Length: 295
Image: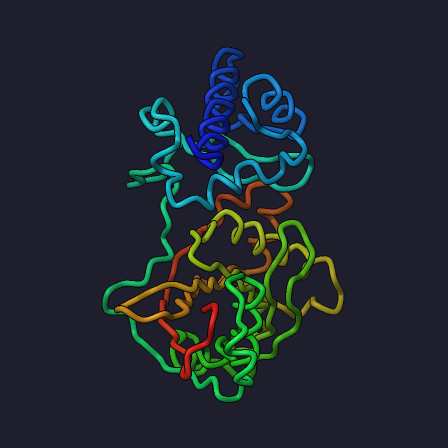
């Protein structure tokens, strides 16, 4: 048995133990929240070969796996129980019931449809040495998307909001918050005011929708509490996923429905950001020409 599979099997034993303990203790479904110290103790007692030094990444490591749905304990799949990440207050994750029409524990909804529009973006303005040295990581994906103005192209040509878009500015990369946000843009919209656009980037990994919900709620709370951002009315989540589509390497950009700041801030305050409704309203495949290594 290779080390990765053995570690994953050990994690599934921890998951089963924690869920069964909640059941045995009569804990209501909505209160099945795993804290850092609960998880550390469970890893020590039931996670053979696992380290308890970094419990915060326990579920995230599971969610990143291509075989996450196959490895999830059958007992929990039979009961239609999944798990979602939790942030703040020493929490790691919570057990939750499947959503309406959900058939697997961790679906990836950011999948480009077969008929997704393809748009070619020039990359000659990116130095050829940079294109050749591109890394297979998310930091490089973010850098290329920002440098080649992929988000600006999207809101100018393909977004359902394109007729309302006035201007869009890149503000920051790798914003160290909880959860971290890969990039933030400021978008001015005709008749709607201003919006902060959050970007979550993934390379050959599932997009974690609960992470995007938490990012949106956090930014909504920040706007409601920060005088300089008091004129921001909306949070618009985006996900950029490097993948193969129609035989070509592309960046799939997924635009979600706007979330008004009041709704997002209230969800954050009530610790109910996981209930924010995230619907993909537009998906486009962007291809760089010439090709860029690492994309």
